[in-house]
Image (tube, rainbow, N blue to C red; front, side):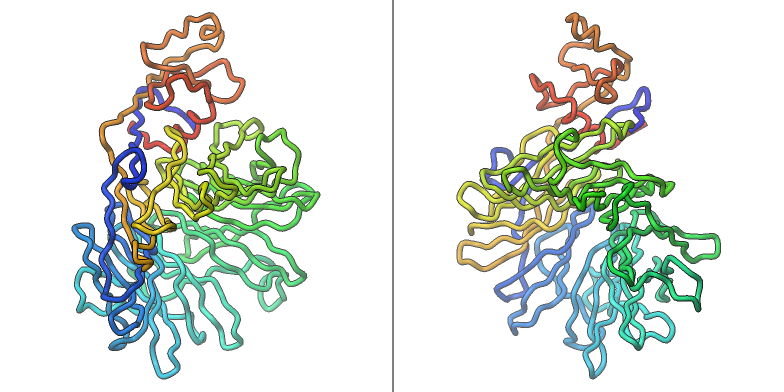
Length: 480
């Protein structure tokens, strides 16, 4: 990451449920009268979507506004027609699927004004000549990604651009029609959070295996596709996420058949590779990347030498050859599964606690892993964190055992860190003369570099971890 002079870094303070050692604004979200509500997604304002069971026992797509916890059922394409949600954009547009017709086929939709219960969803069309389609993702600007299915039952990746109902095809890499491509089917994994987003995913090969791909918008209004390089000597690759600058996070097999986390540059060139934690350790930890944030920090999972399932975060430092991963820690159990990373560096996931129960966690570079608590039951399953890192939604049982949705607002209560960009030398620090103002620490630009800057950040006193600081810097918001 490039650090600009005379800039300030704003770090979001952390907060969790009452059972954790610091506070947050947390709310059990309302129901539709049934005994089950499941949260799906949340945007930067705190507006959330999910599914709730009604008093009739049906599942209905559900919206929770920023201003309260009341559950609002979203209308379908037909009266009492089944629907589901897949996500919500930054301006509150919701994507999902609704059944239509005698055969009950699902069709992709957008709810443009979810605050108006009487407003029917907008139907998104399948590609010309195709039988049906399905929405799977929506980005912060309202572009929806999914599949369109031809009469032979083959799924094709498509986009529905913001404001449009016609499908835009995402081409398959390989030979031009009518020649047969080596690719059997392609799947979208993620959209960049831009108005005209780049897209990433993977394609299954006819002879077996998979390649990671990236689609980029072209001047004709469509998309071009490129295969992303494999690890030298390796084979299969898949993509997990893409950020607004075009960096793609994913997983590849190396020459020995072991899995490694990778980060492809915007150019689509050879990826940076993380084989293990630490990077000098023996291979075989089976690193799997699950998400990437706007700064290029990647989270994922790995297996330790003693068979424990752990999670890591891997932040760019400008020198891929020396970048390392950081174990996120645990809650007393043997399994930790990181799921999402926000643009401020906050990570959510699920971890086994000391009692063997499934606990939700929040991690940031300024503190250890925090148990999110429950709504009264024994477990918690956080499912989404807003892009800005200020909201978490998930599902947890209440004391009677019924699973309800919750929304947690992470507090901003007063921790502001500043970066004073003045070159300093490690030699000065070794000599006891850091040249940094009181309360500030020296941080090198990258591992082994004698150059760096002065940093003041809550939670770092007495902690000499360069990498924890690098993670924080990679996930913070830069105000120039």
